[in-house]
Length: 293
Ligand code: NAD
Ligand code: FES
Image 1 (cartoon, rainbow, N blue to C red):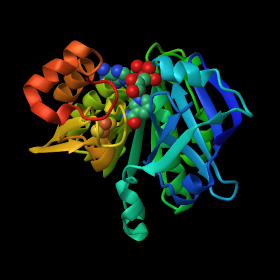
Image 2: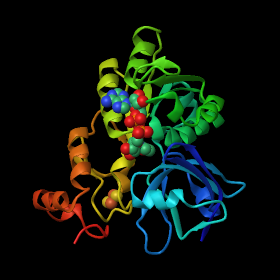
Image 3: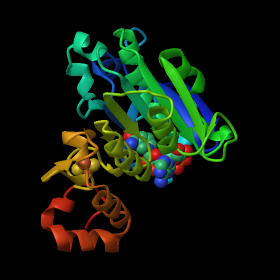
């Protein structure tokens, strides 16, 4: 069992938990995820790690209520325990394997959208710990649903907050912010990491392609079981078929076929949709997720 040490609601429907998981905390790196189950019968929920403390043996997760599993999770309090807390899973962010001196020469910008701010945080923090500064853009629809502002301020070189309705920080979506920074404020970036809703990552990639900035995205949103068995996270990257949970979750965003990934994500939600995928793709769409016949 994995004990919850802290539990709080950051904003409406978005929760933060600190969980006792020493082995995960000892081995994880930014970009990796865990799979949690509230009890032996419940669904597996893949969640990107938001923070870790190796000395205390804890992992911080941030999640939004999107279905029954996360709704049940939101009712858990400090002192309760998860039946499973498996990880670290997936591949760490690419820069974790890069030469630090080479990384220091690069100008890095992160674009975090909504709940996607949580997986961006450990990446920015890790880079800061290695002496690599990075700029961060955080976008939220409105001021009241902005999360982790203070945490991000502590690790980012420059933090740009933007709200869709202009209620706080800059006005407009994250794509406007990166365009303004580059075209009007003279910023230059060698690499961008964009993490958030699929539609945001798609439009970020269209924007950064135009701006000539190589971009990495996290395809965590299309994962279901997170174990390589269900096939839900199948996507096309360039001319290759990949699975987000085993080959990713991070990929070259300029090569990801977002329209296909978003269509599959929608289809996968219903039995009829999964039957359509089975018809179109054969066996590759299922085989152990518990959602299929
Ligand atoms: P949201 O819809 O509130 O969007 C957050 C920000 O993204 C907006 O403020 C805007 O700046 C930007 N954005 C949204 N649509 C855009 C568009 N069409 N063009 C340009 N920018 C756009 O975000 P939310 O409700 O917090 O997001 C929830 C989603 O985030 C869930 O679907 C979840 O799957 C996803 N998520 C993704 C990851 C990941 O690893 N990629 C991690 C956690 C959550
Ligand atoms: Fe990757 Fe199921 S989530 S195969």
